[in-house]
Image (cartoon, rainbow, N blue to C red):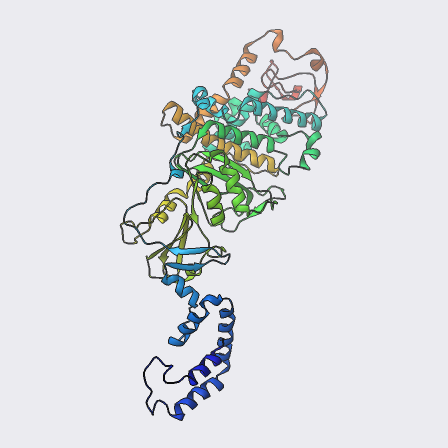
Length: 575
């Protein structure tokens, strides 16, 4: 029924049919009737457009409520609110989202609601039994995360690359020397020397004795040059199925060890980390809201209480997901090892959705996160301005949506399957409990990233697998510190822990060097077939790649007569 038809019905309505009493002669005059008739016939174009829009909106209404809607329009002026929305709000509802999600208004509560069974933590937080048995010092805590198998794999790949590049099978690297190399990286990060030139670290005037005592500068550069995490012979096959294949074996093993060594508390944060690098890589990301802009993006899950990195995965670009958004699939993947134990997951608007909250709730896990206004499940009321510091709480199924007007022109929407009712905290801003809970649990990944950058081993590199390895060492340093503190009840600061870890990492290599320097037995001498073969001098201090049969007794490098110091065969770098 159109507006013109309704007006015509009013004109033809008899006195007995009217419920407003008898009409007077003046009220029944032709002039009044002509005014109604003229108004219906001489409506402006804007009125006709609005009437057309109203007709389109009315077609969406069910026939069951058509008479009531007409009466609503005729009883008073139309104020721009749809009758269906007005009826829902009058009955305690607040409209539907674009996808049909129905929300109802939930009254504010003075006391917190009862804890749901899904949020009763049934697992003790802290290091696992495996970690408690093995962690005794800084080195054992580190080896729980980067075990000997991983170090041997890196050693084998590095040696294979050196043999392929040099065309000589005499180049070798031991696991003890690889640990000493990692120790130098940790000291460089802990001392804030990551932006200092490598030559300055070995300088007699400006360098640190730790570097010169541990390894020669050229040897450090060699190990860094040949450092690899996969073998080139099988790389092409692995890249067909995994774009992260150049370092995926090391990354996946580190994540698996991190999961096996620690159980998180009641709260987990899932967010993104941008590891800064401009290395040549097709999945480098640009994020304008980050300080470093360019880098490799990782999805990380961290424990809110200890800031322990629980799980992680690299972002390699768009992936096919089975009927799921990217944020939903990431949260379900990272939270999978910790589901069903009564924990809560805190996320930001990129990950949060009502569908995700329902999926987690089916696995005895709650979700608290900000919900963007553009989400299809959001009701229209989230965009309406409200009084400053006012709160509106809506409910759909077992999830609540808190709309808090924290700023004059901006509100925040918190979707929670943890809070069955929402109370208002004391204070001038009258924040609701769900907003306060989100603020207290949203920061774990951001703090973890800040901690990693404080003593990062990162250095400039053009090879993205090396950049990923730097990130692994940063996260392993934080996780090892958490394990060491909780297994030994120590309160050692993280910088001191990293320096202690570096000292223990190089201990085995230093013992080998001292034994080689003081031993005179034939077991310290190079094999005869290597001694007879002439090789290029690797010291190159006073020569031009001369060939020699002599080898330095300390670093085992070939050294010519021009680069020898004193009578003993010792290169100038090892004096």
